[in-house]
Amino acid sequence: MAKVLVLYYSAYGHIEKMAYAVAEGAESAGAEVSVKRVPELVSEEVAKASHYKIDQPAPVATVEELGDYDAIIFGAGTRYGTVASQLRNFIDQTGSLWAKGKLVGKVGSAFTSSATQHGGQESTILGLIPTMLHHGMVVVGLPYAFQGQMGIDEIKGGSPYGASTITGGDGSRQPSEIELDAARFQGAHVARIAAKLAD
Ligand SMILES: Cc1cc2nc3c(=O)[nH]c(=O)nc-3n(C[C@H](O)[C@H](O)[C@H](O)COP(=O)(O)O)c2cc1C
Image 1 (cartoon, rainbow, N blue to C red):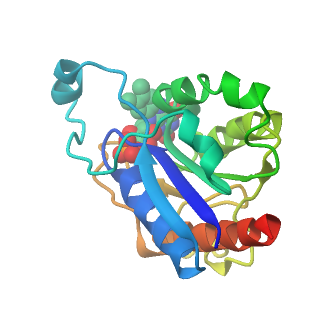
Image 2 (spheres, rainbow, N blue to C red; image 1 turned 135 degrees about the vertical axis):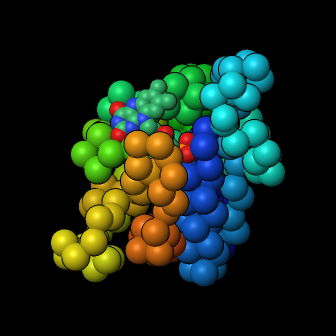
Image 3 (tube, rainbow, N blue to C red; image 1 turned 90 degrees about the vertical axis):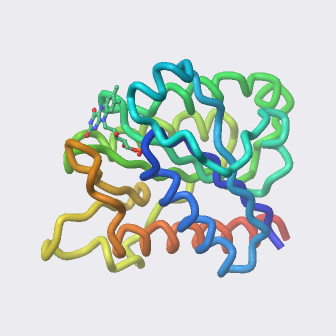
């Protein structure tokens, strides 16, 4: 049974919702799944003033534990076309794992969200791929086998690089059913590949 970590940062709860859908998918494929988040970097005062979703039950991960999983699925929203600094900051503390090759051969994957449809979803996920490769991870995306990313009948996130959701400029749009399906598919896909690699 593959051990999968869904590691996320979410200021407003969209990525949090997507993270649990990713976890559901991984569990459905037989993985043992943990959902954890990275520490917040802004002060409580700023978080409250910015209406962050402060009540998030997922425990905060430690850098050291990353080596304990067969797969890590990273999730964070777009910030000016790239990944939120809270996740980046956490990843930037993984030097000791890199030095020991602790993540070599493990599966890496990513999902994201942005306010606007073309506001940087692809660039955010693609920006995480070099990091996964530096760690020797086997990068897995969201293949077109997930047919939900085809078609132009509705506005939706999701690309071959990973699942995503569009929040709208004021953050009022929640992940749609098709976006949650994409997240579940990605979780299951990662879990299956991780199980094969862990054999
Ligand atoms: C400082 C900042 C920069 C942002 N930059 C972008 C951006 O470049 N493109 C975009 O579409 N949305 C941008 N957003 C919106 C976030 O991507 C959006 O709030 C986030 O994906 C919501 O996910 P969450 O609810 O999990 O925090 C930005 C938000 C903030 C606070």
